[in-house]
Image (cartoon, rainbow over the protein chains, first blue to last red):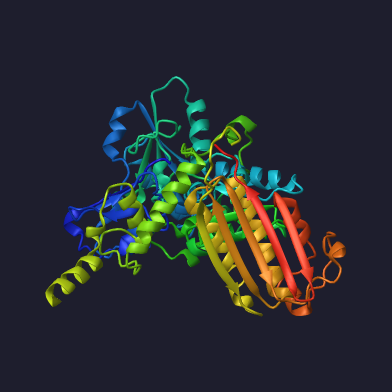
Length: 398
Length: 151
C-alpha cells in the first residue's frame, strides 16, 4: 500500500505496548532496540494507535507553512469538516480570512466538489440493480478493504477523493502559473493524499497540512477581517452520517468497529439488498476527524446555519474529472498457492510452540504475528519472554 | 501427474467447529473464523468471497433447521478447500423444493431475525465448485468443495 503517516517519538514512549494492541492490521511492533516500528505495507492510517497512546509518543504531521515560499501562487483548500466547526456564516468568513493571511493567495472551500462526489456516488448506486457499492471517500476504508476485505475490492466506487477533484479544478483554472495547492486535513489519513510530505507523487494536491499543527496559528489570526464565502449544502452534508439525505437502499455506518462489522456482513453476502454503503471509520463521520477539537454532536447542527441564508450548487464537472481508473494500489501476492500454504503451515507449527497468551511482551501483537516473524527469520523462539521465563525456572529447579 | 511422478497431497489446515442449538447470538462465528483462516493463507479474493457466502448460509441453515451440528474445514496444498456441514437434524423432507429459490420453511423466530429468505441452498449451489448433499431422517451432510486457481 501507500505508506504510513505515523511518526514515533522515542523520548515520549513508556513502552506500554498499547499502540501495538490497538492496531487493526498488526502493523506495529517493538523492535529489538525497544522502539516502535510501523510497517508501511500494513498501516492503513486509521490513527487508532495515535489515540491509544497516552503520552503523545505517536503523532501525524503534515508539511509546514515554510513550503509556501516555493510557489508563485498558493491555494489552501478547506474541507467541509472544518467549516462545519463554525456556528455561523460570519464565523466561517472570519476563519477563511484567518487562514488566508497565513500567507496564501487564495483560500478555497471544497464543499462544492465533495457534493459532486456524493452526487455521483448516489447516481451510480441508483442506476445499478444488483451491485452493492462502497463509498470511496475515506482513504482508511479503501486501505482497510485492500488489507482485510479483498473480496469487496470490486465494490469500491471508482470516484476520486474530494480534495483531488478540487485540486484538479484549481490547477485547470490557474493554468500557466507555478501553483502550490495545500490541503488542510482534519484527520491523519487525509495527510497521505498529497505529493508532500509523504512522497505520493501520483496526487494532484501538493502539500497536506495537519490541522493540529496549523490551528494555533489560525487562532492568532482570528477576528481581523472577513472573506466572503458560500458553501454547498450537499458538500457539507457529506462529512456527517446523520445529515446525509438517506435513501432506503443506503446503509450508513460510522465508527471503526461498526464499519468492520458492516464489511464482514457485506463479504458474507448479507447486504445485497443495499445499493450503497457509506462508511466512516471516524465516529460521527469526518466532523469527528481526530484533529478537530470541537464537539462533533454540536457541529452536526451547524450545517443548516451555514447554508440557510445562501448556498451554492455542487460544481458541474466532466466524468473524467470525477472518476478514476485505479483509486488505490493493490500489491499482488506473487507467491504460488503451494508457497503460501507452505508458509502458512510453517507458521502454524511455530504457533504451537508458543504459549498463545498474545501478551506482546516480545514486541509483536499476537503469537501468530510472532510465529510469522520466526518463519521469516526475524525472530527466534528464544525471543519469547514467557518461554524464556519457564526455561529459567526449570533450570533453577534442577 | 501421470508421468510417473508421485504427488503427495498434503493437508495444510484442518479445523473443526461446533454450531450450538438455537445459539443465534453466535450466528456467523464459525464462518467468520473460516474466512479469517483462509485470509491468513492468502487465497484469491474471488474464491474467498464465494466461501464466505456459502459457509455463512450453511451455518445459518444448520442453526435454523437442524438444531446445530459439526463443521469441518480442510485445505489441501493443491488448492482444494473442502467444507463439511454435518448435523443430526430431522433432514430435508423435500430436497428438490429446498433447492428452489424462494422456498423456505424457516419458523417465525428465525424470520423475525432476518433469516429464512428461501435463498440458502440455491445460493450455496451457485457459488460452490462442487456441491453434494445427503439427507435422511437422522441428519444432513453437506459437502462443499472449492478450487483455488493455481497462480
